[in-house]
Amino acid sequence: MIEFRTQEFSANFSDAAGKPLTRIQQVRTDPVTLKQCRITPSRALENERGTEKLHQPPAIDLRQSTCPFCPVNLESMTPCLNEQISRKRRLKNRKSILFPNLFPYTEWSAVALFDTTHHVEIGTANPGSYRDSFINCSDYLTRVKRADPEAIFMSITQNHLPGAGGSLVHPHLQVHAAKQISTNHALLQKRAREHAARYRTCILADLLLAEQERGERYIGSTGAWEWIAAYAPSGFYEIWGIAAAESSLLIPEKKNIWQDLAEGVLNTQKFYKSLNRNAYNLCLLSIEDTAKYPCLKISLTARSSYAPWVRSDFTGFELASGEMATFTLPESVAAMAGKFWKNSRVPK
Image (cartoon, rainbow, N blue to C red; front, top):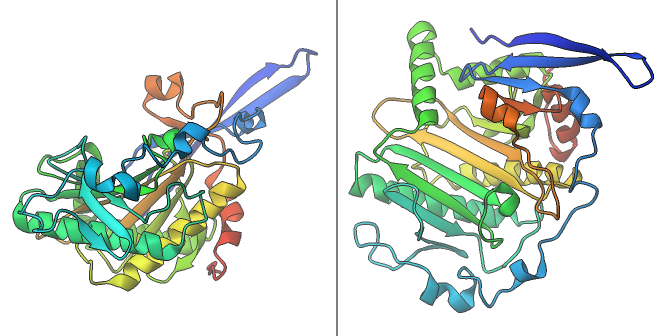
């Protein structure tokens, strides 16, 4: 039902002194998307720039006077929602404030701030701030669905620091809804339909059961969410959270789901912080039509640290092959990350 495919290859040569060397690589196939990735453990022996300590953003990025997301500038420098979404200029949920993205990716793109704090170091946020921001995003997407029923391809994302593609250090989520299906939405839709037609079950739920039975990559749980290291990672130290009982992002009223998610996100951030990685990406997808699509899955990936002269995590190999190349086996990622789940349950 769920197949974990791995092929192993080796490169053989000698060092400068003539000693024979063998370097192993693995090619893994993601059981959900069928995308391939390559794991090259020997590259972890190289010095990874920017990870010798946890770097802080430069002084210019810490200036609140020029940040459009800080309270002094928010009203005058950020756009306002149209009346289709809200009669109020911005959506608010406790300290979280949501407004349109000035540089949108889709017909419906918005930004959801956590609170008034300008810079929050990775792994140190209050889980409540994430919960409230997630709920604000869910509320926005619910309103978008009412205003534009065809905009069913939705996502909530985060780019933490410029090392992950963020343009501002002020912490925020990005939320999107579109009529045009994205590549990853289409792939998830196709695979979910194929799996459901054959087994009459959810592919992500079956993946979670298989990972729990094996225990090699299972990390732990935070309430409604179960966490695993991605079998065929699309980035460094990739971790997935799966909520098997949920299939829609349009659940602003289910505060416990978002609280449980926030705790898992913060656990993952603390793990990345322990590796001296200060940047990361987050992605949560859904297809909001009448069909019951896969349970919710969030993916988090560590990125190159925001630091002087850092090495990028994307190389010519990825461009040439279309396969992500990472250095650390997912089984090792799960073992390292497990201690950040205080109540982790490792199946026997």
